[in-house]
Image 1 (cartoon, rainbow, N blue to C red):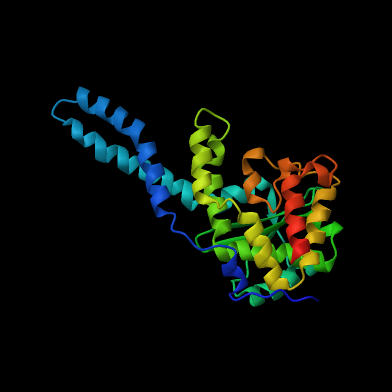
Image 2: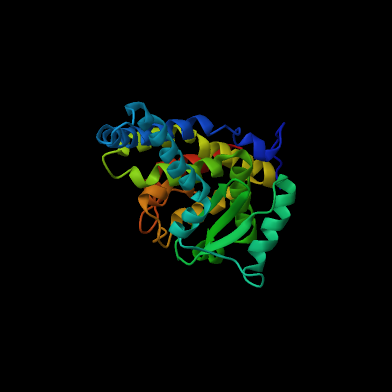
Length: 270
């Protein structure tokens, strides 16, 4: 295998952990605005209650609502993807690869999930101390061990860099709003969470872990080739997958997926 040099651990080269507290605080403040207005009206009609009481009431209620969304992000995203836990005697190759690469990547071994779908894709999900790697049954059946190692490596570096946690948080806080009147605000929030070149960064870090760029290029080509995109993949969750499902055709064609073609071209230069 050809070696790819790197001066830092693979999981760190995919990006830096960033505190999400300022963004969560900003979301709380936005959610609090209408709640403060409602509380102010109630205070106005209740004798003896000053108007300013509405401010802490709105902030407290908003904080509770937002924290509930954040704390349940991991479980809700797995449910939205249709992911089910891998049993101990299922997908042995998948389990062995994750166990081995988790040690090499110096990250805690994540929980394993599968999505029963002929489409080929994978995702990394994280929230707090919970972390999971998700693969479709179509991907597990289609790729060889080298390509699956590359996919798992990419998921692990996304977990280690904090990208998976950011995408999971974005799915919980902003994704449900992307199709409505608050769509621009949701897009802005996701943009603050996710780096523009996150896929290329994660690709490079995964290659630094496996030391074999053709493995990941082969995996991306297999995802692009079909037979179809993941069926249970709502467009507002595109950002959590290794390859955004909406960028793929029903039957893949590299010419129709410029973002994926770029990633494979970059891998070919490593």
